[in-house]
Image 1: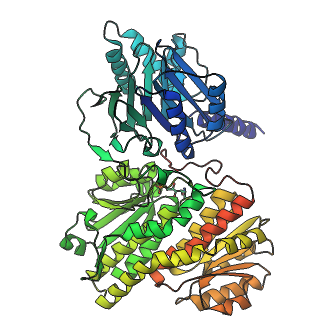
Image 2: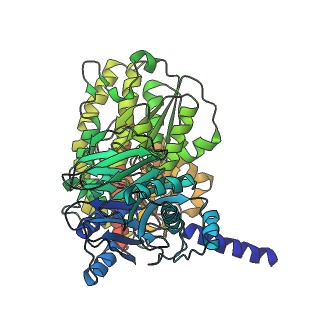
Amino acid sequence: MTNFLIQCSFNRILHRVLDLLEFMCGIIGYVGKASAAPILLEGLRRLEYRGYDSSGMAVMDAGNVLATRKKSGRIANLKALIAENPVSGSCGISHTRWATHGEATDANAHPHLDASGRLALVHNGVIENYQTIKRRLLEEGHVFLSQTDSEVLAHLIGRVYDAITGADPRRRLVAAVREALKQVSGTYGIAVMHADAPGFIVGARLGSPLIVGLGKGENFLASDVSAIVSHTTNAVYLQDRDLVYLTEDEFTVENVDGDESAYEVSKIDFTPEQAEIGDFPHFMLKEIFEQPTSIQNAFRGRLNDDHASAVLGGLGLTPRELRDVERIVLCGCGTASHAAMVGEYMIEHLARIPTEVEIASEFRYRNPPLDKNTLVFVISQSGETIDTLSALREGQRKGHRVLGVVNSVGSTIARESDGGSYLHSGPEIGVAATKSFTSQVTVLALLALLLGRMRHLSIDDGQRLLREIRELPGKVERILEQSDYIREIALKYIDAPGMLFLGRQFNYPTALEGALKMKEISYIFASGHAAAELKHGVIALVSPEVPSVFIMPKDAVYEKNVSTVEEVKARRGPVIAVTTQGHTDLERIADDVIYIPEVHECLSPILSVIPLQLLSYHFAVARGCDVDKPRNLAKSVTVE
Ligand code: AGP
């Protein structure tokens, strides 16, 4: 009994600690001539996919009064609060929070104030030594209104600020932020304002993204360009340990040691419309239907008909260096790791180079033996996933070239990689990755083609692949036309307590991806398996209530899959089959059949995943789930 009590108290402490740390949140700051509140609210709305437990803002008016409004729940709650109790001023910072455990409360929402109530801070990240700092501040009489680590950082900066005398308030605030950040360990992306320094915002980053948006007579600070793209397309992506301060007319980038820090102004590579939901009910559906275009963008300008090969100039490797590659490691998390698995099968099939996938969080600790001719790739839609970033840094520490397959231009992974290829998918707002998966697989197919044509792949095989890659967008269009039919199938199984996804060879990773889509937006248990594994235990889960989804295009293992379908049917398990059009024999045994166009077996996951995306989308919507903001998740996991 004693042990049980100890365990319970430990769990309670653990939940309280985890409840207090700020994970993947959204930040936007504005300084200019316009009213800040509407701009901040609009930015928060665009950032809501990053976190949506609570939100708030601090705005400074002409009288240098710092007004704060914050509210638990969705951005709409904050908007209503501000409508009742408006704030005025043309300089402000704001935040949308994503907590991991426990209820989000108004008190834990950002911004947090310092002891004087004249300094406001918003924070994305984890201050790991906040308890030690808090104890010291409590001894000095500080009173905390929340239990968060972020409020402790606000108090620490305020304490340092108050201890600096004489200097201009702006210089004092910069010095206070710099000094306080030297005392903390962990990660941060912060924006700070002080009532003594109107029209002035200080920002800093370590491990959490922060971007400066450069406008005309106005400037922005944001954790993600989607928050500011409707105001400017000129952005400065801050690096770790950068510190920035900005007014409406200028900005300065230094590092936390006070030295000038080099920066470059980048163009945001998508339009405001691309970051808008348009006529779709959800971003996820919009992005599923964008795939004909996003796949096209992934291979546009990268097909070389003369050589029956691909062109990936961003890799920064000479043909000789590419020919010397003896082993490839592909790292990623979640959907990106599933795309990596397809990449493994494609590279080994087309280029005969030993390739393996490492879950990024494992790679960085597993310390696998890699030799000098091993090429490491990191795959990430957001380019900010901390596990993948850490794998990149670990690979580089061991002297390997680490190349990125990334969607977000200017993201940390993109900037720290030794080269790579962008997906050019446009912003992926829906938390469930869809178009990024098919674009990642497309880019990896190009890589496999390039490497294969430098080795044993014939020109005929290369030309066939080029032809098939070009045909992908049209084939995806044809699958998307079945959305209503797939919705009917989803409704048929709406009460299923769980779902199995089964595939072989190139479509084993597709099965994993289909299961992830289903579980992360509908919250039912779903698992993906290599189909032959069914008889090694998984089949115990087969029952009339649990449908099995088979991804089984007409390929070399099709007949094997048919046998496995029979095994499920023999146990009265419902079967949904995704197969190649024209093979109607499956209608004899499967309960539902979704057809996809004929395609090269290497490329089949790009087509076979579409029905799974639609199935999970319609299933989750029918169950009343918020497919764009599924519970407990966030779009970019920027903490370990
Ligand atoms: C996939 O639907 C999830 N959103 C999640 O698994 C995601 O793929 C993973 O967190 C990796 O994200 P990244 O591609 O941005 O690095």
